[in-house]
Length: 479
Image 1 (tube, rainbow, N blue to C red):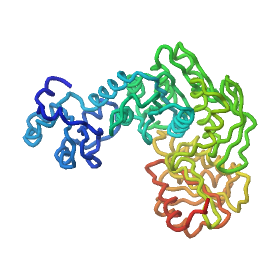
Image 2 (cartoon, one colour; image 1 turned 180 degrees about the vertical axis):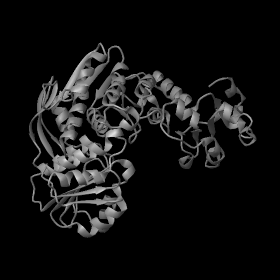
Image 3 (cartoon, helix red, strand yellow; image 1 turned 180 degrees about the horizontal axis):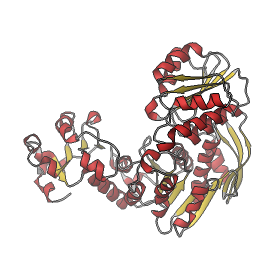
Image 4 (cartoon, one colour; image 1 turned 135 degrees about the horizontal axis):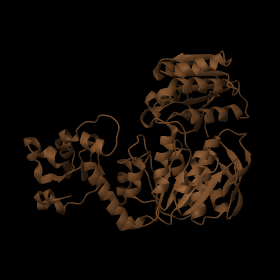
């Protein structure tokens, strides 16, 4: 951290760090607080404008933080911060310091890393991969929630040395690696924890507002494969031509997964007739087995195949994979099927949305073979789609109309284009709401027995408020 660190009180180094934090609002006793500033964010490739957390250092100390990592040039000349200098670790760049610390923990640990990226499905694939490996005896460190950027990944790695844990307690790490701008974000993540296995799920037109073109998205995602260790394994989606084209990005082994095209790990004899349950025949290079996935949608089946491909690379037999998949659960707000006592069901996929993932879920509820009176799609605005965003929303509406849906509600902003596209394609029962709050107020009175409702939208649209309103008004059915 540099010579400035020597100015810190010697007593400070007798204290044990319990945890690491970048948010002064959630600091607890015994934590080391990293005071991030706009210069740190900019150098690390983050989009947007952020608060200078140096102004919250005193608050963090008041909550029990034992020390703070601060930018040296920011502290210099600031009397309030200089008064706290004996508890400050001064560095040139606070995010770089956080990442360097995580990299050194990784180096000392030295065990395998699975890196997972893709335009959608990262968190589900990460959870499924970790679940398969844990069910087969591995002690897994995994990304918390969707911690997949230049802050989240190092914080996930530092969990190895937080709250009394030690690196020796983990056999493998399964880490999401995301990006949202053309600033080599994934390349930086692979330098913190070079992957032994890199998983590419799919490419879709997301973050176009910052990346500009699908070609730029492909190049950004391919940084994971380019960042593999020399003997690393690339796990690629055989059904996505943009992903399978990455096989030339490294010299090591490639393992493929897919449904439509020939693949090393594949699903055959697929049965999706029961909502929330997929039965299939799992085929791998180590053999075959029947498998059941308690989730909905082709996209979740593909995520399960990606996880199965990782497990296969690590020698897990297909029967063991099939058994472990049967006890998997979807992450919250990512395809949860909620059955209500009043006789309707809701598919809560409200965490995020893009055109491909929206249409995947629409097809899922359209194909569900169950006693239904109405299939209703509540589709929120999809953010960060770039200059073609209006056209992408309108085309999504047309495709929804052709999928066999009875009703469509669009929520906020460009979701008006989804509604317009659906009406153009002949769906007369299509309504626009200006906000999730407005839609939530209406749904609790309009929902009825026999309805199957999909709720989906970009995170900023907060379509989860619609699900919350239903859960507050109606009890869930007993399991």
